[in-house]
Image (tube, rainbow, N blue to C red; front, top):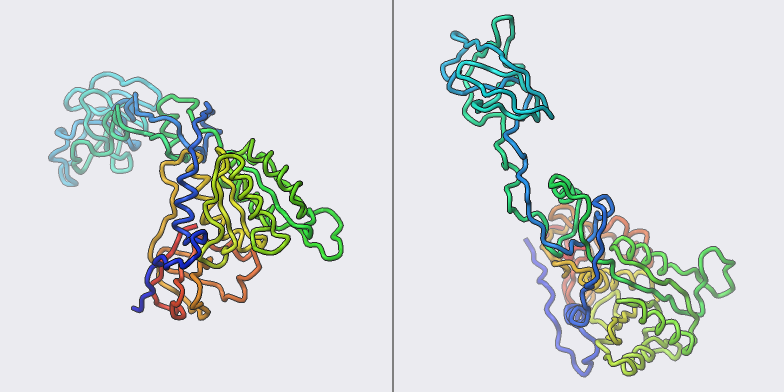
Length: 421
Protein backbone atom coordinates (compact mmCIF):
# COMPACT_ATOMS: atom_id res chain seq x y z
CA UNK A 1 0.00 0.00 0.00
CA UNK A 2 1.39 3.40 -0.93
CA UNK A 3 1.45 6.07 1.72
CA UNK A 4 0.77 9.81 1.86
CA UNK A 5 2.36 11.26 5.04
CA UNK A 6 0.33 13.44 7.43
CA UNK A 7 0.89 17.16 7.25
CA UNK A 8 3.97 18.61 8.94
CA UNK A 9 4.10 22.37 9.56
CA UNK A 10 6.52 24.08 7.13
CA UNK A 11 9.13 26.62 8.11
CA UNK A 12 7.61 30.08 7.81
CA UNK A 13 10.19 32.41 6.36
CA UNK A 14 9.53 36.06 7.07
CA UNK A 15 5.76 35.60 7.28
CA UNK A 16 5.03 35.15 10.95
CA UNK A 17 1.42 36.25 10.48
CA UNK A 18 0.70 33.52 7.90
CA UNK A 19 0.20 30.31 9.86
CA UNK A 20 -0.44 26.63 9.33
CA UNK A 21 -4.02 25.63 10.04
CA UNK A 22 -3.17 24.00 13.37
CA UNK A 23 -1.41 27.08 14.76
CA UNK A 24 -4.16 29.40 13.55
CA UNK A 25 -6.82 27.24 15.17
CA UNK A 26 -4.85 27.04 18.43
CA UNK A 27 -4.57 30.84 18.48
CA UNK A 28 -8.32 31.25 17.96
CA UNK A 29 -9.22 28.66 20.59
CA UNK A 30 -6.89 30.28 23.13
CA UNK A 31 -8.89 33.50 22.80
CA UNK A 32 -12.33 31.89 22.87
CA UNK A 33 -14.11 31.87 26.21
CA UNK A 34 -16.72 29.17 26.77
CA UNK A 35 -20.08 30.66 27.62
CA UNK A 36 -20.98 30.61 31.31
CA UNK A 37 -24.66 31.41 30.84
CA UNK A 38 -27.10 28.53 31.29
CA UNK A 39 -30.73 27.81 30.53
CA UNK A 40 -33.24 25.37 31.99
CA UNK A 41 -34.93 23.68 29.02
CA UNK A 42 -37.62 21.01 28.66
CA UNK A 43 -36.08 17.75 27.54
CA UNK A 44 -37.90 17.94 24.20
CA UNK A 45 -36.15 21.24 23.47
CA UNK A 46 -32.69 20.20 24.67
CA UNK A 47 -31.69 17.96 21.76
CA UNK A 48 -28.29 18.95 20.37
CA UNK A 49 -27.57 21.38 23.21
CA UNK A 50 -24.62 21.12 25.58
CA UNK A 51 -25.22 19.96 29.14
CA UNK A 52 -24.28 22.47 31.82
CA UNK A 53 -24.47 19.93 34.65
CA UNK A 54 -23.15 16.56 35.76
CA UNK A 55 -26.15 14.28 36.31
CA UNK A 56 -26.07 10.90 38.05
CA UNK A 57 -28.83 8.34 38.37
CA UNK A 58 -30.92 8.60 41.52
CA UNK A 59 -33.19 5.71 40.53
CA UNK A 60 -32.27 2.22 39.35
CA UNK A 61 -33.40 1.12 35.89
CA UNK A 62 -35.36 -1.02 35.80
CA UNK A 63 -36.72 0.03 39.21
CA UNK A 64 -37.72 -3.59 39.96
CA UNK A 65 -36.97 -7.12 38.78
CA UNK A 66 -38.63 -7.17 35.33
CA UNK A 67 -39.79 -9.78 32.83
CA UNK A 68 -38.25 -9.37 29.39
CA UNK A 69 -40.65 -11.61 27.44
CA UNK A 70 -44.25 -12.77 27.51
CA UNK A 71 -44.47 -16.17 29.16
CA UNK A 72 -44.41 -17.83 32.56
CA UNK A 73 -42.41 -16.76 35.60
CA UNK A 74 -41.13 -19.70 37.63
CA UNK A 75 -38.27 -21.17 39.61
CA UNK A 76 -35.50 -22.61 37.43
CA UNK A 77 -35.01 -25.40 39.97
CA UNK A 78 -38.56 -26.64 39.28
CA UNK A 79 -37.76 -27.36 35.61
CA UNK A 80 -34.13 -28.45 35.97
CA UNK A 81 -34.98 -31.97 34.73
CA UNK A 82 -37.53 -30.98 32.08
CA UNK A 83 -37.03 -32.48 28.60
CA UNK A 84 -39.25 -33.52 25.68
CA UNK A 85 -39.61 -37.06 27.02
CA UNK A 86 -40.28 -36.00 30.61
CA UNK A 87 -41.99 -32.58 30.57
CA UNK A 88 -42.86 -30.71 33.74
CA UNK A 89 -46.35 -29.31 34.37
CA UNK A 90 -46.80 -26.46 36.87
CA UNK A 91 -50.06 -24.92 38.07
CA UNK A 92 -50.56 -21.29 36.98
CA UNK A 93 -51.52 -19.43 40.15
CA UNK A 94 -51.62 -15.78 39.04
CA UNK A 95 -51.46 -13.37 36.08
CA UNK A 96 -48.99 -10.48 36.21
CA UNK A 97 -48.96 -7.61 33.69
CA UNK A 98 -46.92 -4.46 33.05
CA UNK A 99 -48.02 -1.67 35.34
CA UNK A 100 -49.45 -4.02 37.94
CA UNK A 101 -47.96 -4.95 41.29
CA UNK A 102 -45.54 -7.79 42.08
CA UNK A 103 -48.30 -10.26 42.88
CA UNK A 104 -48.01 -12.92 45.54
CA UNK A 105 -44.74 -14.71 46.30
CA UNK A 106 -44.28 -17.72 44.06
CA UNK A 107 -44.02 -20.99 45.97
CA UNK A 108 -41.96 -23.97 44.79
CA UNK A 109 -43.78 -25.87 42.05
CA UNK A 110 -45.87 -22.88 40.89
CA UNK A 111 -45.85 -20.65 37.78
CA UNK A 112 -47.26 -17.21 37.03
CA UNK A 113 -48.46 -15.95 33.66
CA UNK A 114 -46.47 -12.76 33.00
CA UNK A 115 -46.18 -10.10 30.29
CA UNK A 116 -43.14 -8.17 29.10
CA UNK A 117 -42.30 -5.37 31.52
CA UNK A 118 -44.19 -6.81 34.48
CA UNK A 119 -42.70 -7.10 37.96
CA UNK A 120 -41.27 -10.51 38.69
CA UNK A 121 -42.95 -12.24 41.63
CA UNK A 122 -40.83 -12.99 44.66
CA UNK A 123 -39.30 -16.47 44.33
CA UNK A 124 -39.25 -16.59 40.51
CA UNK A 125 -35.85 -16.40 38.83
CA UNK A 126 -36.61 -16.93 35.12
CA UNK A 127 -39.33 -16.60 32.48
CA UNK A 128 -40.20 -19.35 30.00
CA UNK A 129 -41.27 -18.11 26.57
CA UNK A 130 -44.98 -18.65 26.04
CA UNK A 131 -44.31 -20.18 22.59
CA UNK A 132 -42.24 -22.93 24.26
CA UNK A 133 -45.13 -24.08 26.44
CA UNK A 134 -48.52 -25.74 26.20
CA UNK A 135 -51.37 -24.86 28.53
CA UNK A 136 -54.42 -26.83 29.62
CA UNK A 137 -56.62 -27.08 32.66
CA UNK A 138 -53.80 -28.76 34.60
CA UNK A 139 -51.38 -25.87 34.14
CA UNK A 140 -48.43 -24.96 31.91
CA UNK A 141 -46.29 -27.77 30.48
CA UNK A 142 -42.58 -27.13 29.92
CA UNK A 143 -40.20 -29.35 27.93
CA UNK A 144 -36.76 -27.85 28.55
CA UNK A 145 -34.86 -26.20 31.37
CA UNK A 146 -33.80 -22.56 31.83
CA UNK A 147 -30.86 -21.10 33.69
CA UNK A 148 -31.47 -18.63 36.55
CA UNK A 149 -31.88 -15.06 35.29
CA UNK A 150 -33.02 -16.06 31.79
CA UNK A 151 -35.51 -13.66 30.20
CA UNK A 152 -35.64 -11.32 33.19
CA UNK A 153 -33.56 -8.39 34.37
CA UNK A 154 -32.83 -7.57 38.00
CA UNK A 155 -33.45 -4.14 39.48
CA UNK A 156 -30.71 -1.76 38.29
CA UNK A 157 -29.61 -3.99 35.41
CA UNK A 158 -29.60 -1.11 32.89
CA UNK A 159 -28.76 1.82 35.17
CA UNK A 160 -27.42 1.54 38.71
CA UNK A 161 -27.94 4.27 41.29
CA UNK A 162 -25.02 6.69 41.14
CA UNK A 163 -24.09 5.94 37.54
CA UNK A 164 -23.07 9.01 35.53
CA UNK A 165 -25.73 9.77 32.93
CA UNK A 166 -24.51 13.12 31.60
CA UNK A 167 -21.31 15.08 32.10
CA UNK A 168 -20.98 18.79 31.78
CA UNK A 169 -19.89 19.53 28.23
CA UNK A 170 -21.66 16.52 26.70
CA UNK A 171 -23.91 17.08 23.70
CA UNK A 172 -27.42 15.90 24.50
CA UNK A 173 -28.78 13.33 22.05
CA UNK A 174 -32.04 11.41 22.05
CA UNK A 175 -30.69 8.41 23.97
CA UNK A 176 -29.30 10.54 26.78
CA UNK A 177 -32.49 12.58 26.99
CA UNK A 178 -34.40 9.32 27.23
CA UNK A 179 -32.21 8.28 30.17
CA UNK A 180 -33.02 11.56 31.90
CA UNK A 181 -36.73 11.04 31.29
CA UNK A 182 -36.35 7.57 32.80
CA UNK A 183 -35.09 9.25 35.98
CA UNK A 184 -38.20 11.43 36.14
CA UNK A 185 -36.58 14.60 34.80
CA UNK A 186 -38.67 16.97 32.72
CA UNK A 187 -36.04 19.71 32.27
CA UNK A 188 -32.26 19.96 32.21
CA UNK A 189 -29.67 22.74 32.37
CA UNK A 190 -27.81 23.54 29.15
CA UNK A 191 -25.32 26.20 28.16
CA UNK A 192 -26.76 29.14 26.29
CA UNK A 193 -26.08 29.09 22.56
CA UNK A 194 -22.98 30.97 21.38
CA UNK A 195 -23.84 34.29 19.77
CA UNK A 196 -22.52 34.83 16.25
CA UNK A 197 -22.90 37.68 13.77
CA UNK A 198 -22.02 37.54 10.09
CA UNK A 199 -21.20 40.30 7.62
CA UNK A 200 -20.78 39.73 3.88
CA UNK A 201 -18.74 42.51 2.30
CA UNK A 202 -18.28 43.75 -1.25
CA UNK A 203 -19.71 46.34 -3.64
CA UNK A 204 -20.65 43.53 -6.00
CA UNK A 205 -22.89 41.64 -3.57
CA UNK A 206 -26.64 41.67 -4.07
CA UNK A 207 -29.09 40.04 -1.62
CA UNK A 208 -31.11 37.18 -3.15
CA UNK A 209 -34.59 38.35 -4.12
CA UNK A 210 -33.42 41.71 -5.48
CA UNK A 211 -32.80 42.57 -9.15
CA UNK A 212 -29.21 41.78 -10.04
CA UNK A 213 -27.34 44.92 -11.18
CA UNK A 214 -24.79 44.91 -13.96
CA UNK A 215 -21.51 43.56 -12.58
CA UNK A 216 -23.20 42.24 -9.43
CA UNK A 217 -23.45 38.75 -7.98
CA UNK A 218 -25.86 37.27 -5.49
CA UNK A 219 -24.56 36.69 -1.97
CA UNK A 220 -23.97 32.93 -1.74
CA UNK A 221 -21.82 32.89 1.40
CA UNK A 222 -24.48 34.50 3.58
CA UNK A 223 -26.89 31.62 3.02
CA UNK A 224 -24.23 28.90 2.85
CA UNK A 225 -22.62 29.83 6.16
CA UNK A 226 -25.80 31.05 7.83
CA UNK A 227 -27.32 27.60 7.48
CA UNK A 228 -24.17 26.03 8.93
CA UNK A 229 -24.32 28.39 11.90
CA UNK A 230 -27.84 27.21 12.64
CA UNK A 231 -26.79 23.58 12.24
CA UNK A 232 -24.05 24.13 14.81
CA UNK A 233 -26.53 25.53 17.31
CA UNK A 234 -25.32 29.13 17.18
CA UNK A 235 -27.65 31.99 17.98
CA UNK A 236 -27.29 34.25 14.94
CA UNK A 237 -27.56 37.84 16.16
CA UNK A 238 -27.16 39.57 12.81
CA UNK A 239 -26.62 38.74 9.15
CA UNK A 240 -25.88 41.74 6.95
CA UNK A 241 -24.29 42.84 3.70
CA UNK A 242 -22.07 45.91 3.49
CA UNK A 243 -20.31 47.62 0.55
CA UNK A 244 -16.57 48.30 0.53
CA UNK A 245 -16.77 51.44 2.63
CA UNK A 246 -14.35 51.64 5.55
CA UNK A 247 -16.54 53.70 7.90
CA UNK A 248 -19.66 51.65 7.22
CA UNK A 249 -17.74 48.42 7.72
CA UNK A 250 -16.31 49.67 11.00
CA UNK A 251 -19.73 50.65 12.34
CA UNK A 252 -21.24 47.31 11.34
CA UNK A 253 -18.45 45.25 12.84
CA UNK A 254 -18.20 47.25 16.08
CA UNK A 255 -21.93 46.81 16.63
CA UNK A 256 -21.64 43.09 15.99
CA UNK A 257 -18.66 42.72 18.31
CA UNK A 258 -20.70 44.25 21.10
CA UNK A 259 -23.38 41.58 20.85
CA UNK A 260 -21.54 38.45 19.75
CA UNK A 261 -18.95 35.95 20.91
CA UNK A 262 -17.83 35.58 17.30
CA UNK A 263 -18.07 37.86 14.27
CA UNK A 264 -17.52 36.30 10.85
CA UNK A 265 -16.93 38.37 7.73
CA UNK A 266 -16.58 37.29 4.12
CA UNK A 267 -14.57 39.21 1.54
CA UNK A 268 -12.01 41.98 1.83
CA UNK A 269 -9.22 39.89 3.36
CA UNK A 270 -6.69 40.00 0.52
CA UNK A 271 -4.14 42.76 -0.10
CA UNK A 272 -5.92 44.79 -2.78
CA UNK A 273 -6.77 48.50 -2.39
CA UNK A 274 -10.44 47.68 -1.70
CA UNK A 275 -9.74 44.78 0.65
CA UNK A 276 -10.55 46.67 3.84
CA UNK A 277 -11.18 43.95 6.42
CA UNK A 278 -7.47 43.29 7.06
CA UNK A 279 -6.78 46.93 7.90
CA UNK A 280 -10.02 47.28 9.86
CA UNK A 281 -9.35 44.16 11.94
CA UNK A 282 -5.97 45.51 12.98
CA UNK A 283 -7.48 48.88 13.94
CA UNK A 284 -10.30 47.32 15.97
CA UNK A 285 -7.95 44.92 17.74
CA UNK A 286 -5.69 47.80 18.78
CA UNK A 287 -8.60 50.01 19.83
CA UNK A 288 -10.37 47.38 21.94
CA UNK A 289 -7.41 45.78 23.67
CA UNK A 290 -6.94 42.82 21.36
CA UNK A 291 -4.44 41.67 18.78
CA UNK A 292 -4.14 40.22 15.32
CA UNK A 293 -3.73 36.45 15.48
CA UNK A 294 -2.94 35.73 11.83
CA UNK A 295 -3.42 37.25 8.38
CA UNK A 296 -3.36 34.15 6.24
CA UNK A 297 -3.17 30.36 6.21
CA UNK A 298 -0.69 27.98 4.64
CA UNK A 299 -3.41 26.02 2.85
CA UNK A 300 -5.72 26.05 -0.14
CA UNK A 301 -8.59 26.70 -0.38
CA UNK A 302 -8.90 29.27 2.40
CA UNK A 303 -5.45 30.87 2.29
CA UNK A 304 -7.02 34.34 2.50
CA UNK A 305 -8.30 34.06 6.08
CA UNK A 306 -7.57 36.27 9.08
CA UNK A 307 -8.23 36.07 12.79
CA UNK A 308 -8.19 38.69 15.53
CA UNK A 309 -9.04 38.96 19.21
CA UNK A 310 -11.12 42.10 19.78
CA UNK A 311 -12.13 42.77 23.37
CA UNK A 312 -14.01 39.70 24.58
CA UNK A 313 -14.91 38.60 21.06
CA UNK A 314 -13.20 36.91 18.15
CA UNK A 315 -13.20 38.28 14.60
CA UNK A 316 -12.77 35.74 11.82
CA UNK A 317 -12.36 37.11 8.30
CA UNK A 318 -13.04 34.62 5.51
CA UNK A 319 -12.48 34.79 1.79
CA UNK A 320 -15.14 36.20 -0.51
CA UNK A 321 -14.95 32.99 -2.53
CA UNK A 322 -17.78 30.78 -1.19
CA UNK A 323 -15.81 27.53 -1.46
CA UNK A 324 -12.73 28.97 0.25
CA UNK A 325 -14.94 30.58 2.91
CA UNK A 326 -16.76 27.31 3.55
CA UNK A 327 -13.49 25.38 3.90
CA UNK A 328 -12.05 27.83 6.42
CA UNK A 329 -15.39 27.94 8.24
CA UNK A 330 -15.44 24.17 8.76
CA UNK A 331 -11.81 24.02 9.85
CA UNK A 332 -11.74 27.11 12.08
CA UNK A 333 -15.21 28.44 12.92
CA UNK A 334 -16.78 25.06 13.65
CA UNK A 335 -14.35 24.05 16.44
CA UNK A 336 -14.39 27.63 17.71
CA UNK A 337 -18.19 27.65 18.03
CA UNK A 338 -18.11 24.26 19.71
CA UNK A 339 -15.67 25.51 22.34
CA UNK A 340 -17.72 28.65 23.01
CA UNK A 341 -20.85 26.50 23.34
CA UNK A 342 -19.25 24.65 26.28
CA UNK A 343 -18.50 21.35 24.57
CA UNK A 344 -15.91 19.21 26.30
CA UNK A 345 -14.61 18.01 22.91
CA UNK A 346 -14.31 20.59 20.20
CA UNK A 347 -11.07 20.10 18.25
CA UNK A 348 -10.59 18.72 14.76
CA UNK A 349 -10.89 14.95 14.54
CA UNK A 350 -8.53 13.01 12.30
CA UNK A 351 -8.28 9.49 11.00
CA UNK A 352 -6.58 7.59 8.21
CA UNK A 353 -8.46 6.63 5.07
CA UNK A 354 -7.90 4.66 1.87
CA UNK A 355 -8.38 6.38 -1.49
CA UNK A 356 -11.02 4.73 -3.66
CA UNK A 357 -10.22 6.79 -6.76
CA UNK A 358 -7.37 8.80 -8.24
CA UNK A 359 -6.89 12.51 -7.61
CA UNK A 360 -4.09 13.60 -9.88
CA UNK A 361 -3.78 17.33 -9.24
CA UNK A 362 -1.50 18.09 -6.30
CA UNK A 363 0.61 21.21 -5.78
CA UNK A 364 4.26 21.56 -4.93
CA UNK A 365 3.83 24.98 -3.30
CA UNK A 366 0.75 24.58 -1.10
CA UNK A 367 -0.89 22.25 1.34
CA UNK A 368 -4.38 21.39 0.14
CA UNK A 369 -7.43 20.43 2.16
CA UNK A 370 -9.93 18.99 -0.28
CA UNK A 371 -13.49 17.99 0.56
CA UNK A 372 -14.28 14.30 0.10
CA UNK A 373 -16.70 11.57 1.07
CA UNK A 374 -15.63 9.14 3.82
CA UNK A 375 -17.46 5.83 4.17
CA UNK A 376 -15.88 3.79 6.95
CA UNK A 377 -12.23 4.03 5.94
CA UNK A 378 -12.83 4.51 2.21
CA UNK A 379 -12.32 7.99 0.74
CA UNK A 380 -13.86 9.19 -2.50
CA UNK A 381 -12.73 12.53 -3.96
CA UNK A 382 -14.53 14.34 -6.74
CA UNK A 383 -12.53 15.37 -9.81
CA UNK A 384 -11.00 18.76 -9.10
CA UNK A 385 -12.79 20.44 -12.00
CA UNK A 386 -16.11 19.59 -10.33
CA UNK A 387 -15.23 20.96 -6.89
CA UNK A 388 -13.98 24.45 -7.68
CA UNK A 389 -16.63 27.07 -7.11
CA UNK A 390 -19.56 24.68 -6.76
CA UNK A 391 -20.70 24.67 -3.11
CA UNK A 392 -23.66 22.38 -3.85
CA UNK A 393 -21.24 19.52 -4.54
CA UNK A 394 -20.17 19.73 -0.89
CA UNK A 395 -23.52 18.40 0.30
CA UNK A 396 -22.26 14.86 -0.33
CA UNK A 397 -18.94 15.45 1.47
CA UNK A 398 -18.12 14.83 5.12
CA UNK A 399 -14.35 15.21 5.41
CA UNK A 400 -11.21 16.93 4.15
CA UNK A 401 -8.30 15.02 2.65
CA UNK A 402 -5.10 16.64 3.95
CA UNK A 403 -2.64 16.79 1.04
CA UNK A 404 0.81 18.14 1.99
CA UNK A 405 2.69 20.43 -0.37
CA UNK A 406 4.79 18.36 -2.72
CA UNK A 407 2.73 15.21 -2.24
CA UNK A 408 2.64 13.03 -5.37
CA UNK A 409 -0.71 12.53 -7.10
CA UNK A 410 -3.13 10.50 -5.01
CA UNK A 411 -3.90 7.05 -6.37
CA UNK A 412 -6.51 4.44 -5.59
CA UNK A 413 -5.37 2.39 -2.58
CA UNK A 414 -3.15 5.14 -1.15
CA UNK A 415 -3.48 5.86 2.58
CA UNK A 416 -4.29 9.50 3.35
CA UNK A 417 -4.82 11.73 6.37
CA UNK A 418 -8.45 12.80 6.80
CA UNK A 419 -10.02 15.59 8.88
CA UNK A 420 -13.66 14.91 9.68
CA UNK A 421 -16.17 17.62 8.83
